[in-house]
Image (cartoon, rainbow, N blue to C red):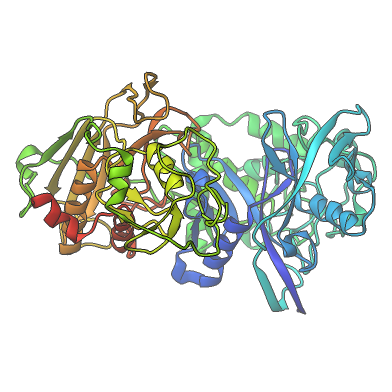
Length: 619
């Protein structure tokens, strides 16, 4: 054991044999679940830390990531780095890819670049760590030494990766790297993938046992470029070689089992492509694999799973082993065999299932909600209140200030004692007048407040730009649609003592009005009808009543750019979170979530919707 401190970076193995780091936020999330131990369930839902990773789950027992919608499995590992290196300082180096977005470098590359940057070197040559690039700090560019192609690079600050201190393990049985031995041992003992063009030669020369080497042991010849690694020249997947022998042996072919009837785990540091002890030659085994048809492979997968379950080995979930998923039982069995060949005895099981909707409900089982009239509500486009000028609207919320304080107006950033710095269309009001909002006492140029009101929804309300206090009744720009709500006889996870309130939103596509970003242009409405769920409890009914107020005020949805798909001019959620997952919480939008009702009440209050609003609506 080693006494030390280090930052922890969680990484996953991509299809080109490169270990790619998760972001600091995701690494913190994984580390927190890992430290929580068995009580956390042994699985990490990445969508809870980053909504873009919603399909992905990590099984901590087997150290593998799998994707729910495709069944793809990838190894993950937990690497240690010096706290004084780039990940310990929150420094991320990135290169600009062909689509114009930024991609972070592998962790060891980023650390090398940062080290040279801190030493104020004018450039750094990455060929020493296996890449054919030079990074020029003067131009912040990456130059390919072979093609002379240039790309932009950038250095940005992010969260610091999680820090651990005390006793660190000398070695751990992480999944082996495709080009080298085991995963992180102590302070990063791992080997990078075999460089392009060296794969076939390295197979012939490969000894039976290779121990993990430090990064300086990497071949000096330039490897494939980060932006487009060659699948042909890339490293093998773990366990690619030797899996035929494993299959043939399990099917009764050449090569007997290891002593005791179980397959010995390869030593830490053995290359993943080496055959397990006690198996036959690779050529004969591959020939035997070719003779197995689908039914043989299915029986083999089932037999292997039974043996592994009986022996109590860790499990790796895979979606729909018996369904229509690309991962069928035969492929699932082969995946398990590949992992076993790499020194990971695993059993393939079904993962937690995404449950978006409740079981079917008949019309006779649907109930109205006590205390709430009707079960459906429609909205139409509401016109802005007429007859009052912006100056007349703001006069209700302001007091004039004769002697402005010596501070800046937070709208135009000019001194309050000087005229307004607003340069847009000029309101019919003097630019040097100053007013104070009566509730929160924040002070602004009247000129700036009128301009801000004119650029908004012009609905007779005003929101303080400093503290977000709302004056009047705030309304939104939600397009026309329908909201249905009723009780169904099923319980949500974490709310077994009550039934469920189901809300169904339906908004059709249409044409944007004058209050929308692009008046006259059509907008799309994806994913409707949208089903959302609340517990039928006292607090759940309270949330529903306030959501009805928000719906009437057109605050549930808006028209803008989707953060999920990037599509513009489409209907999007408007800062009031809903639970759209009925029987699970794999995406972070389901149950159980003990804080959800309190959180959504706070979000509604931020829109000016509280219990007082219910009384206002009745009036």
